[in-house]
Image 1 (cartoon, helix red, strand yellow):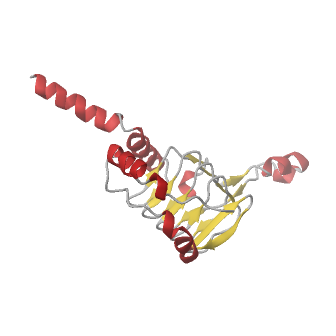
Image 2 (tube, one colour):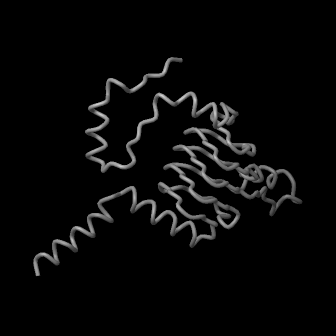
Length: 187
């Protein structure tokens, strides 16, 4: 009986003790329930969706970091409603489409009518006001092209370390053993 209880605790901890996985599973499930089209092999870290979630389409192998806001309407219509009766019920609304193999960094904001092309990276804190071509790295406020994907790979070759095959503890040991070899970037 005790081994079964230990196994049950282990399974519960493995699922709920891993906040990253738990948050991801709940965020994706909630997004789909709210009408967001979500592809396969995605990771969401407790993302904020707009009130028109059904206008959001997310491709395969997409990571959306924590604090990201996907906004499908422009609150500026509020002002228009106050200046003219003909805008009393108006909204400015647009779709958001995110292609395959995209990473959107922490606290980025994607505004209505934006399409993010495949194989793109959106830097943390960016405000994406215009569509992003495929294979682009963008960042800033408003977000602008930083470089293309090939330039990004070449620029970061020395910083790429293979750690995804390790457990968290093995990863820590590996990084600490190779700490002196990690590259600091010059401005």
